Length: 231
Image (tube, rainbow, N blue to C red; front, side):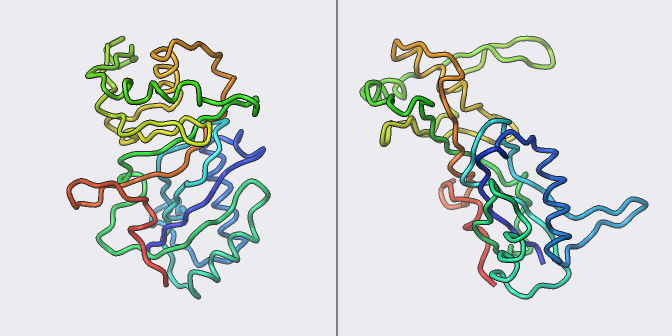
């Protein structure tokens, strides 16, 4: 059975890189006594894939990991046992079974949403809220991007699906696919430049809110955990 696990990452663990998170979950799954499947071959490893890696220093309310299991006692039992094996900074949010036709988490990623807040809680993006519509009305938002052949000018506007200010935070949804991944820090920088503001990068805390896949219905976006079902 293919299982999709949604979890949050926050607090001190936001400084743990992606490879260390992978190693952590390999150990946590063993401690939880989950009957995880292993690959065949000379060096077997747990069958496990993650969605879009999270940058070091970012918090997230919507990270995803797919595993395969040989047997199970139900979603709530698996969620409880895995949560008991996790420290402060990792919360298991949901456990769902995937249909056999579902792609793995990494291959399914189409977009991600973020909230950007000032580290100084007395500040907000409210003063820039009136610039959001005009920012999205631009036909081009050009950035310089490093490629295998050097530096190229890239238009990221088609990959910014929404942007606004909510409760003082800058909230947006952008392309997160392997072909057009847009970093949240780049969107924040471009928006502030458009609004005539300038802030150092360390003035913000970036939180990933959700990761999305294409629903197949008019190419709509749905959260990755909507693909699975409770069991």
